Image (cartoon, rainbow, N blue to C red):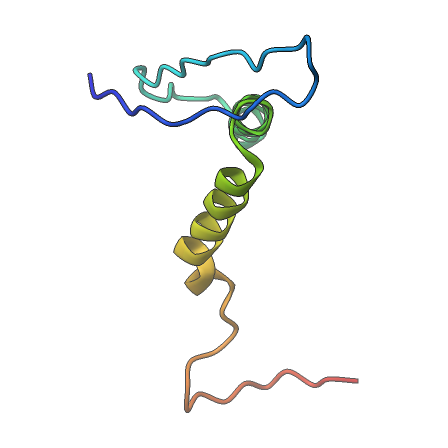
Length: 91
């Protein structure tokens, strides 16, 4: 198993230490009966992961992670390619 070591956030309250965190990703996604069941699990996993990271990482690291993740998926948000035309009317 690979281990990735990242700095945790500094405490912001005098008596409240930021907890260290270990995230284990080691099981394959099961076959779900419906797309709704799969979507429910993906949303829950994403919410748990987002909460864990936002509560543990320095704000700058969390912000840069979000930027990298959006850049990775940016091509999925593209409407058309250069030179292509669309038949979409804009009111």
